[in-house]
Amino acid sequence: MMFCPECKSMLKSSGGKLKCPKCGYEQDVTDKSQLLKTDQRVEREIIIVDGDQNMTTLPTINVKCPECGNDKAEWWLRQLRSADESEVRFFRCTKCKHTWREYD
Image 1 (tube, helix red, strand yellow):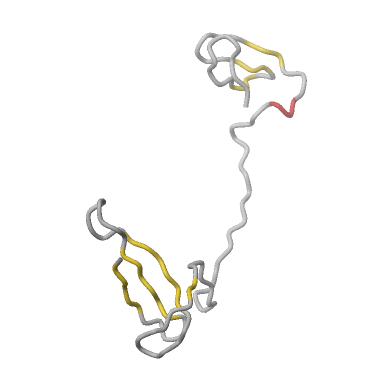
Image 2 (image 1 turned 90 degrees about the horizontal axis):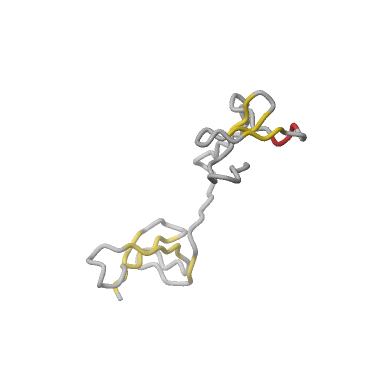
């Protein structure tokens, strides 16, 4: 991406030149790789994750589940009350998926 040295607008490619749409400044391009083709599409790979895979991105903590007694749970914070009060900490057991909360 290149910018106009006079008005600092973004230069656009047109006919082998970079042109400023604002002030009309033009610059010849010696390296054709500097030109951005507006009709050029970028191929992206889409990854589909099966819901049956046990993938979590939540942090875990050693805490005892009140339902099954398991000693590991995922946790996260939520601001449920007004902003001047502390967040509520939620836990979800990694074994039985029981969810409970803890107030500070």
